[in-house]
Amino acid sequence: MHSLGILLSGRGSNFVAIADSVDAGRIPDARIAVVISNRKDAPGIAIARERGLDALVIPSKGRAREEHDRDVVAALQQHQVDLVCLAGYMRLLSPWFVRQFPQRILNIHPSLLPAFPGLEAQEQAFAYGVKVSGCTVHFVDEELDHGAIIVQKAVSVLDRDSEHTLAARILEQEHVSYTEAIRIVLEGRFRIAGRRLVMTDAPTVHRRA
Ligand code: GRF
Image 1 (cartoon, rainbow, N blue to C red):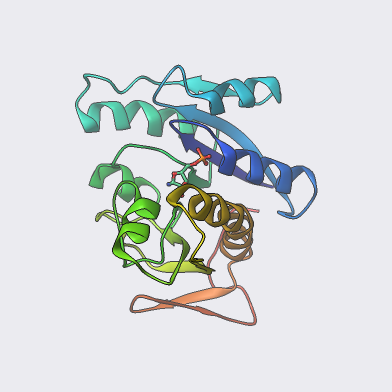
Image 2 (image 1 turned 135 degrees about the vertical axis):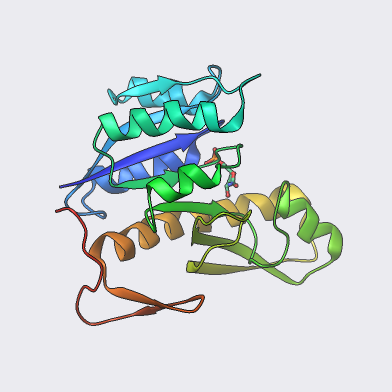
């Protein structure tokens, strides 16, 4: 059984999509072991509690990054988490955190990376005038929005779009993409060649089952 740890800071719609996929068996042999927010008022953490999941608030405000990260990593380890999913977690991970879970931290970003990293990616893409944007699920490394790409989905920008309608269509694809990416990673049927994730027939990455 794989144990997922979800980190979030806000609305939590990607967390809900993952939780629904776990419940429906679209992410087989997995459970959500813990949901952690760095903000106590995050709607996502209230939803996690309503769903009966272990939900923790570990406030980050005013704390040094690595000191906060140590508490988060300790909580993830206590819950025996073997895959960490960032789902709208508005905090950079320290290099130390990343090293605790090598190739076992995923993030979702609402653009086709490497275009428009950072905050408000949908607004950045809309303002730039791109005709296609989308979302990316990638491994987390020590640079922002940077690790090897697992899944990307494209979304056309329509003439009638506003930044809000575009963001809403991207979000629909995010919800599908995150489940796909988690499955790929948990099944271990991939290898990383340079920056490229390449699918393989048999599992190549050992994961706790
Ligand atoms: C999503 O757009 C995600 O791509 C970005 O933060 C947003 C989180 O939304 N990293 P939600 O909290 O999952 O609804």
